Structures are given as C-alpha cells and as structure tokens.
Image (cartoon, rainbow, N blue to C red; front, side):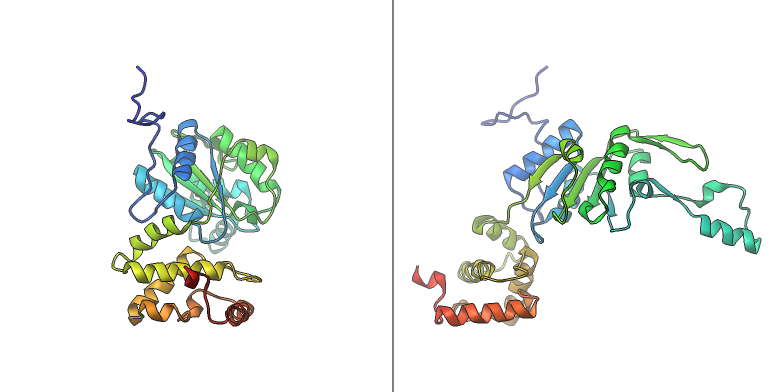
Amino acid sequence: MAAKLEKGSFMSQDFNRFSGTDNYITSPELRHAVDVAVAIQRPLLVRGEPGTGKTLLATAVAQDLGLELIAWNVKSTSKAAEGLYVYDTVKRLQDSRFGDHDVSDIRQYIRLGPLGRALTSELQVVLLIDEIDKADLEFPNDLLHELDVMEFTVTETGDSHEAAHRPVVVITSNAEKELPDPFLRRCIFHFIEFPDAELMTRIVRVHHPEIGDTLLEQCLARFYWLREVKGLRKRPSTSELVDWIGALLAAGVQPGHIAKEIPFLGALIKKEEDVEAVARAEAASGGRWPSDDG
C-alpha cells in the first residue's frame, strides 16, 4: 500500500520524520536533508560557519526520533580504527607487572570506541562524528569503509560484531580541509545557511520568550550590522547573540539605549582586533546606524 501523503505535500508522512525540537529551530531544507539521510541510510554531512548549530543538530535528531546519541569528537590524531575499539596494552602490561590481575583474558582490555558502541547497540542510535576535517586525509576514506560494511572483528580476540541496526550518522565539518570525493559521494550534504532575521527571531524567542518586540528588533539590527563590519576575523554567531540578549535583559537595558550604542560588546566580539574594527566602523558611521534611516 502506498504511503499516505501529507495534505498539501508531495511527501509521505513516513518520510517526514524529523521536525526539529522546542529548542532547535530548523529550516525546511535542513529537515528534508535529515529525512533523506534517514530514509536511504546515508551519513548526513553538514557544513556551515561556527554557531549555526551543526553539532547540536545530532542532539536534536536523537531527541526528536527518540534515539540514544553517541558522540565522537574527532581530533587531529584520530584514526578510524580507534572509533571501533582500542586494545589497552599499557594497562595489561601494568597488571601483568604487578601480578594482582589475571591478564589471560584479553577481552577485559578491549574498550569499544564510539563507532564500535554504535554498531554493537541493540537499538538504533544517532552517531555524531564531529569536525571530521580535523583528522588526517586518510580518516574519511577509512571511516567510509567501516560505515559501509557495518561490521568489524576484534583482531586480538577474534570476536566479530555485526550491526543489528544501521545508526543515523551525522557528520560535521568546518571546511578546514577538502574531503575526498569518494567520501562525499556516499554522503547526503547540507550547508547550514546563517539564519536570516525571521528565523533568528524564532530562535531568540525560544531562549528569551519574555523579550519585547522593540528590543528584539533593535538587537537584531545591531547584530546583523556587526556581522557586516569589514575586517572582522570572527563574526558573532547565534549563541553569542543569545548570550548578549541575556545580558541586556539581566541589566534591564532599554531599546532606546541599543539605538545609540552596543552595550556589553564583549559578549559578541571576542578578538581585540575585531573590537578595533567595530570602533572604526562606528566612527565612520557618524553615530548613524543603517537601520536609523528606516
């Protein structure tokens, strides 16, 4: 029997599984990317500038789908095989030296990594592979092999493990280096655009539902003006906007004050040279903000 279509939609109800959460507001395009990855069982590779919610996406997917989240924070020294398991030879050597442990059972020195835990889980899980581009160039292709076969053998014991369920895999990248084409071909890709004012309004109201319309308008105007200041090394992100507004609300700052200056600039700008760039931009504007003309 054909899957029932949602009213006014070309997609079935079974396909539309991810809807975001109360604390994670998404665009339709991102929701569709997650649904495609889940439906055809491919890793979802997400890119976007810092602060666009790449890492938090996996948490939202796990929460929305009711699955456990397993996180793998990739480092420059990470190896794909270590994601499966690690044989702790140092601990076994120490136990053997001091003679207070039976070291004949090697299994007690095998520690499953995040990928190994995901593949051996009795239930489907969400596996976050965070900042994959931090690792060396061989890592993505090695990882691709493990994700394809969905099984592994512990060489030291001969134990074989085959996944009962293919995990929902979310991979994040900051585009610090190019990823291999074979890896990209096996992924569903989505670039998280920085939220526009409409979406940002919804995001801010999740965190600060008590904020007044006028204050929020002024805050967003100043925030987007800051992001356009020329020469910034680190533009303020969504999380910094939320923190800044929290500080304004705590201090009781009024909208009229926001129209004249940017209080608590350190909540938004985190580099000394960027503070100087903002000061130059303010001086060049002659005290008039772009929104003042409207």
